[in-house]
Length: 66
Image (cartoon, rainbow, N blue to C red; front, side, top):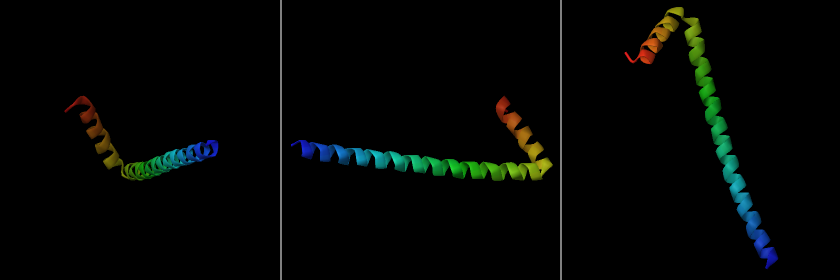
């Protein structure tokens, strides 16, 4: 009886660990993608000062609720 319970406990733990690790890996992938996209956007804004100025103006308007 104890061996059967131990096997079920181990299976349950393995399943929970696998689900947790999968979720962690997915979150890491989303983070890396978002970071990459943000870096690219910042590089574009740094490359074109006029675009950066327009971005900052638009950002200010949005924050004011215009």
